[in-house]
Length: 471
Image (cartoon, rainbow, N blue to C red; front, side, top):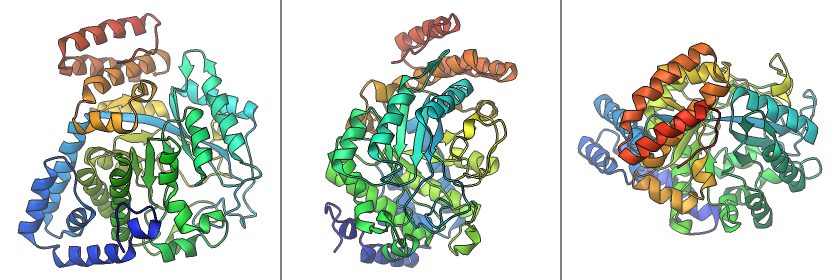
């Protein structure tokens, strides 16, 4: 029985409700008056239900699909402006006791070398990331209670925050580790993490159990209810995601929106981020073995429909995707991207990109500086800002600002100041030249005279060597 406020996974992600939603969407995929009314509702920027959004995703009317894409672009600009938040993944360990059939870290894979970073190796990795210019990391680890206990993760977070190299600092550590207990989530919160990220992989329970045949991750309910435990443990920024290609994409789309609705209904705060990874080749994993892969066109439509359905959420796309796909996705609603990523354990200290411990093949292999320059040449502001997290604007406080479209009053100048830091400390000469022109063009867009004046003053201070200003 579907109940958005239930704390039971099979009730807030109800299979019958999703099946009925998909049937309804099929019946109305050419219902122009209904689709136009849903688009009009989406223009109010208060979101759509999973059923309304599923109708848009199923829509076969080309002109209406184009309207949805243009609306997604408009909503993204209204909530997040032309800022794109930069981050990098940091893989701590690929030891894992699970049997996930789509991940090369699965326990039965004897071909992949197993590796776990020491604290000294983590320091070297972090310094390499700081030397690129990164300020925000997402730490990743396989699930292994012996090799990767919560104590190890907490020690790693402490180490990462402790490293101050030249002008470099990691100012926000997001955490992507296996579902755990309320007590452990409380410990992560006390360690000062940003967002807790956990991909559902698939919301289809039967498929989920087949894809996770062994290990603690086999438990569908425990995994799906993790975000509720995280919020109970005090973590107020959580990030959802599915691995598109494992199950029918329309099922996953409805499921992730139902999960977002559940978090909003129970906790008053929806997902801080939604990620949209697609299954990719990696070591012994062949993506063609999964018969639910989706085209670039469908992938872009999913992104646009999530943006209009959940206007407040940050949307993340990784280096799994090519430069071409990422370029289109940025226009349709993506607000965070990784740059210069290495998906192997210990990959950042290697001169040549190592492939033997990669979790997935990286499609976009450009350096961070190349990505930053590309973004600016595309009229985006690469943002290294972590101000909201460090000023306590998280959870419902962030969402209140975001939903009222007030976040831009501080985020736009913060993005420009952190970009100026990057230009001074890390940028190639060509990148710096492009960046200076972009900042000069963006300053007049700050509406508040006082904020604009302070920003200009702080930009000059940054050029003289000061760092870490924020509104």
